[in-house]
Image 1 (cartoon, rainbow, N blue to C red):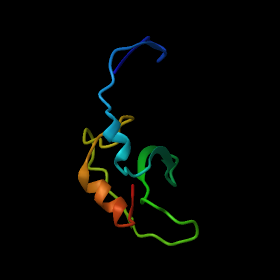
Image 2 (cartoon, helix red, strand yellow):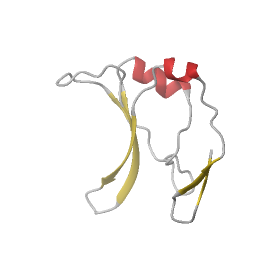
Image 3 (tube, rainbow, N blue to C red):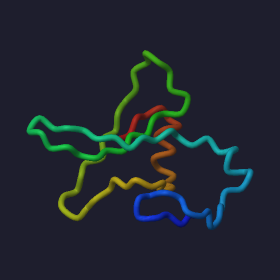
Image 4 (cartoon, rainbow, N blue to C red):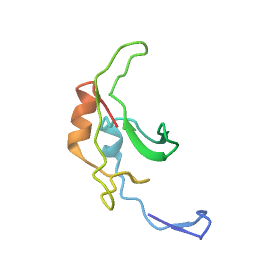
Length: 95
């Protein structure tokens, strides 16, 4: 937890709830990206990659469909959820 100014610069660290055990968990790498549709609309997407991903190997993809106005599901923050981690463990790309 940190205190930031209006430009996003960290002013002061307020606390850290991570323990040494946190680093022992294998969490799937996750990226926040954008995707531009054929009609030029730019949408934010979150991609969660499989654990132990191998270059050149084909992976199944699970796409979560956007639910409409005011049903946002993409956030620039870490949201712990076990189901996406299970997909990553099973070798499924989720976006």
